[in-house]
Length: 307
Ligand SMILES: C[S@@+](CC[C@H](N)C(=O)[O-])C[C@H]1O[C@@H](n2cnc3c(N)ncnc32)[C@H](O)[C@@H]1O
Image (cartoon, rainbow, N blue to C red):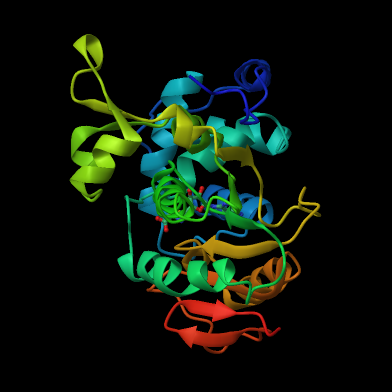
C-alpha cells in the first residue's frame, strides 16, 4: 500500500514536546478547564500565522474540544501547560499536530456533483479537441484534498474520459496542510458507507472489496491510486513545488475558513499556477464576490483564467 509520498510531521514531534513539557512548572491539572482569553488568542494567532485559518472570536469551545485530544496524546495535564509548551517553542513539531487537530476535513465522494458534470461535459471535451492548447497531458491539482474523496472522484472522472482518448494523458497532484488527512488519503481505504455516492459500476471498477479483517472496507484500485500523488503543502508557503502550470485547480471548501484579504491572496497565487484558459473550482458555499481576482466567472463556483 502506497504511503511513502506524504511528508509527515517530524518523528521527533512528540519527543520535542515532551522535552518542553519537562521544563514547565505545572500549575493546573484539569484537562477540562476553559481556554483562557490569553491562550485562546495565542492559539488563534498561531493558527492564523501558520495556516491563515481565521478562527474568529466564537470558536473557543471547538478549539478547547480539539485541544483535548492533543492533551491526551502528549500527556499534558492542562490546556494552560499545553499553550505554555507551544509558547516556549511555537515552531516545534507539535505545531503540525495542532494544525491537524484544528483543521476541518469534512468531505465526501462526488461532493458538489455539478463540478464533476462540468468537468466531464465541458472541460474534458475542450481539452480533447485541442481548444485548451496543444498539450497532450491534462494537469489537475486538488489543493485542499483532505482525506482523498475529492481527488479520487476527479481521478475516476478523468480515468473514464481518458479511456476513450488514449492518445492523451492526465496527471493529478493533491495536497493539503494536514499530514493526518494525507496519510489517510494515500492509503485510499474507505468504509462501505463512504462510497455510496460512487455509482455501483465505478465501485466495481475502481475499488477493491476488503475481505476477512478488512470486511466492510473498500480500497481504491492500485491502478487508479498510482495516478494520484499526495504531498503536504501549505497554500501560504513562500513558494509551491510545481514546475508546470495546471489546466484545472480544485480549491473547494477551504476558502470559507479565510478572511477576504487571504482569499484574495490565495486566488492570486493560484492564478499564477494556472494555464491561460485554465479553470478554478471553488466550493458552492464560497464566492469570489467582493474579492479582487483575475478570473472570468463561468458558472457559480467555476472560474476561468482569460486566454
Ligand atoms: C473541508 S476540507 C475540503 C476538502 C475538499 N476540498 C472538499 O471540498 O470536499 C478543507 C481542507 O483544507 C485544508 N487546509 C486548511 N488550511 C489550509 C492551508 N493553509 N493550506 C492547505 N490546506 C489547508 C484542511 O486541512 C482540510 O483538509
